[in-house]
Length: 115
Length: 111
Image 1: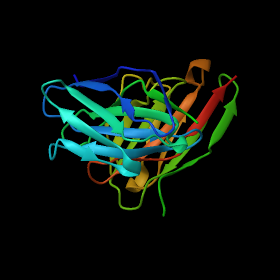
Image 2: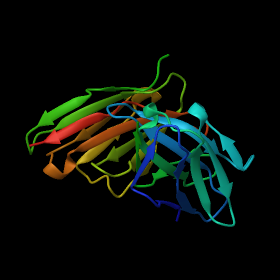
Image 3: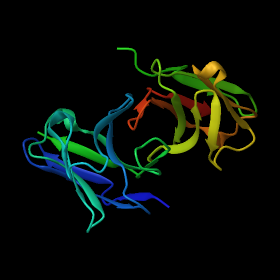
Image 4: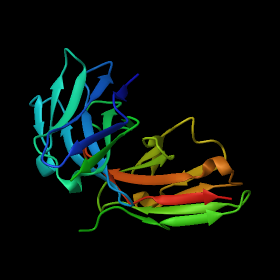
């Protein structure tokens, strides 16, 4: 069965410093992986997706993630945090390749950004 | 930009009452999904449709829950005899390929 584990429930950074949100996955086959962001009182927004193309995936708002099969990881990074990045971030795996089927979400990582 | 819309955005009901939520997907998206998100957790899959056919239902979807997608357009999720444990955010998403686009959700509070 497919699953994801987000290693940190809360991450706090200062504005302008790097962001690292960690995610490990478990999958029976080559997975499709996603990062979604959820701002308060707003819907889930796709940040980026990996679907077996390039292992380094660039997303919106300066975020990127690297798929590492040997480590079963898909960590999300950003070189410089902005106050507007404060939100809940979810690492997600699709239960079938291509993301056509149901998504399996991690428990989420709440990112706080301090001035 | 006509994204996924959900109605109502908020619903407060008393235990034992029935509630119905509506989801309007992005036009021409043939797949529609329902998820439930409780406080402090990630969303959990409930069910999905390809066009009008309901292809999968989670074990979370007890017999008090029913979902429909007549004519393969909008979808409704009905909860009968609501319980306090049903209090959650109910999210709808639609897709045509690998990316699922989410609506703003319906927040349900059962008193």
